[in-house]
Length: 84
Image 1 (tube, rainbow, N blue to C red):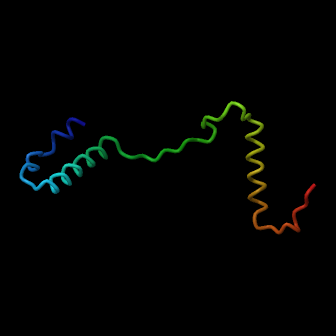
Image 2 (cartoon, rainbow, N blue to C red):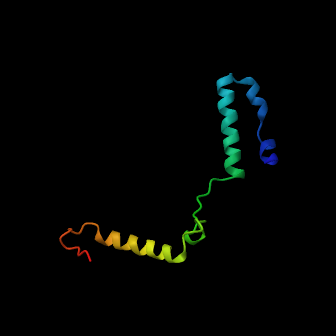
C-alpha cells in the first residue's frame, strides 16, 4: 500500500479549493483500496456453514427433503394433495 501512496502526486491538493481537494483525495484513496484490497464475492459452501450443535445430519436431510417437497407442491391445487 505504501508504494501506491508514493506514486500519487499529493502536492496538487494544495492548489485546489477544499471541496475539489477532498473529492480528489477520497478518489485517490478509493482507487488505492480497490487495487490493494479488491472487493471479491465469496460464497460459503452449505456444508461448511457453522450450525447450532443440536442440528444433526438427519435433521438437515429432513429439512432438504421438506424443502424439495414444498417446491413440488407449489402451484398444485389443494384438492390434488392427499393428507395422510
